[in-house]
Image (tube, rainbow over the protein chains, first blue to last red):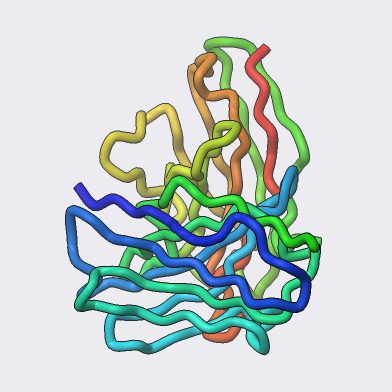
Length: 118
Length: 111
C-alpha cells in the first residue's frame, strides 16, 4: 500500500528556509493531490499547501507569502519550502495524500519534528 | 484561534456513546458536504475516520459515525473502547482560497 515518509533537517535557524521532502512508496504521485500539514507542540493541526501532479498548487493564505510546494513525479516525491522561519514555525510537519475532490487526507506520513532555534 | 470550534474535551465510560461537535459557519460546514474527522493518538499521525460528513474509509469500525446539521457537524463514537481514547479533529472544505480549515481538536477520554 502507499506509504509516505518525510525527510529534512530537524533544526533550522531563525530567518532561514525550512526544506522538507516527502517520498511516496508503493504508489505513484501521478493522479493525486499531495499536501503538507503542521502541528505545533501541544497544539492543533494547520493545513499549509497542496500540489497536484501537474504542478498546480494552492496555499493557506496565512502562509502563502513564505511557502512553496512542488512535486517531482519522476522521483515520486514532493517538497515544501518555508522561508524566513521564526520560532512560531516550530512544529511536527506531516505530508499527506488528498482524496480526489473530497478535501480529506487519507494517507499520512509519520511526521517530522522541525525546531527553529539559533 | 481555529476556524472550526470543537469542545476541548469529552469523555465516556466503556460501552457508552459520546458525541463531539464541530461548529463552523455558512462559509464552510454550513455550505459544503465535505466534513472529515481524524483520530490522533499521542505521538502518531492523524488517521482519517470519516469523510464527506458520514462516510467511513475501509477498516474504520462502524462504531464511528458522522452527521451534520446547519453549521455544526458531529462525530459519534458508540460502544466506547479503551483504544478510542485520542484527540479528534474535524475539517471542512471552505472554498477555493481557504480550501480546508481545521477544528482545534477534542481530547476524548475513556473513563
